[in-house]
Length: 636
Image (cartoon, rainbow, N blue to C red; front, side, top):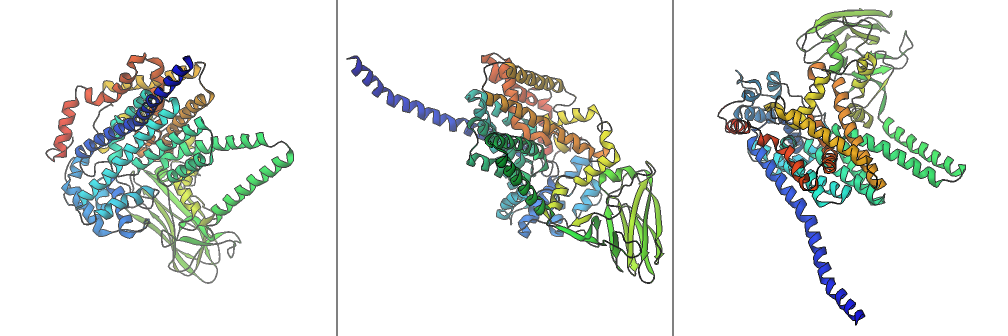
């Protein structure tokens, strides 16, 4: 009888188990779907409130995407479309763009984006940012090819809203991987879904939305790999996401470099643990050396030994010609036939050392056969200063000097051959600020260049190697951070609520700034307390430690970026840390989960992100945003 009763009970429990399993499966989809819907509604609210072109760099980001749609390829810096620039400029005027950002309408409506840049700084993105996001955003532009430009802008903004919703869902999935708790995952997802600045940046035209999605997806896949162990599928997915991240935005670089370092250490330990004799270990070392050699050969494949690094010819995409053993000197030198020019554009961080100073440029010049004529030139945008000279078989030094104003659009040092073939080497550009410090790179032209579009050229530009080299040579890296502690404060405030060009002070100079600092500090202390508690699985401890390292790496990049920019441009934006928002949300949720009683956890975590709605000035701010959206009044 007892056996029969147990059998019947087991049979009757099967449908109940199936119903429980079905309920769990529905819950796994319902909660992230609700989070995604909430994020979309939040994004649509910002799309409605945000006037056209008021997201950071939105006009120039739109130009990049529109050129991709028109050309059907990734454009270069030389590609321009006057008709497109006219359409954008006209839309800027219709949308009261200049009233918002400079406080008044322009006396003469701009016809090109260069005219608009003369009134307000908007760096051109074409040829600079990685192309992946712009290839995606070209799709809605093609579908809306015959629509008004404001409608096209709306279509690209909606794409950003979808990508932002995907990032929130990835945060939910990563939280489920970390603790396996629905409530914890919901709390972490709400931290992101209700973050005002994250939504604002996500809906603007720009590659931040895709970078944020890839950052959250990398976090999810990484936690799953730590929990379930490595497999070919998970490793391939992680590598694919890393490649997409490289093609999207530089703000993902800290996370990728950290993952590469951790992956290298893990692979080395794993291989070393499996190899039992020195023959196998020697073979593994040889294999690693072979892989390194192949990588070096790929990177070196675009080398142009007849060109000089950092020196452009008559075209911005053509290197100036050089010879390895020039006549008379037997050393590397630039060779300029009649009508040719060699130009070096100084990086902004180097050109800053010449601002408000006297700049002295010099070069050693000569000719091989007969007389030659040329000019040594300093061009700083507002004016050009030239020193004509004659050259013969004897090496001579030519000098030119001029005062560089406090602000100049750019700074070029150039050498032009007006007749005959010139040879030149020993270039120098020094300012009165620090004589003896050469502002020019590859001044002795011993470094060969790489063809335009070569992989190494793109990586050098992507990693800002030239700027970092200047920071190292000049000793700027040893100086205090630009703006000191104020830089960190600005970064923190803009992360939580400094709304780009609209400059609505939702956090800075309000009580919420201190409150948010305490919330972040509490989350950090809670994570440290969680790590100190015994009984957690080893993989979970490693995951939390790795998430902390991702945040630290993400915070170091803006600081290093501040060193590679002029001090007038070092005001960083907190959006640069948004690719690491998934680790931030997870650790905030984990820290406060550790500190708060069970019944307070979800509400306490979410309340911090409702602060802009709850503050006393919220109604006034909302009214001002609404009026500005309708074009009734400009922002102060």
